Image 1 (cartoon, rainbow, N blue to C red):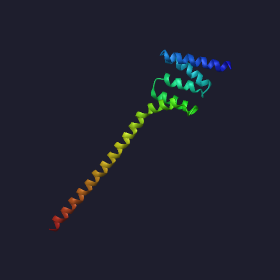
Image 2: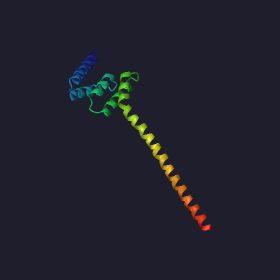
Image 3: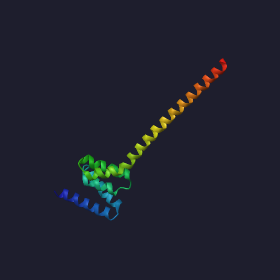
Image 4: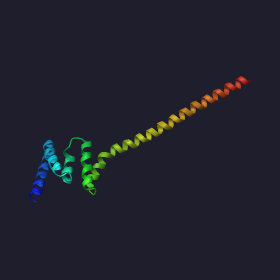
Length: 127
């Protein structure tokens, strides 16, 4: 019981550090809590706020959802982080489709022109 209270106190300390924009100190406390219990959902959630990059935040939020798939806040935050990347992948897919279609049409046009040239050469040579 005292151990759980100590963990909660340290989590609250880490939260205060995050709010005070002392993220490196908060991350140290949060890492300790996560090392002690890899399934500490709230520690992973606050770690997602304390880290420096969106990639790191995404990893932390994935861990929150691993521990609790029903955490709507983590799912929503993860969606906001990944949405621009997913949109960019969709755009790249559409651009690749247009590129491939254009390339096919180009080569069909080249073949058509070659056959037309060959046909006109054959007609002129038979005349």
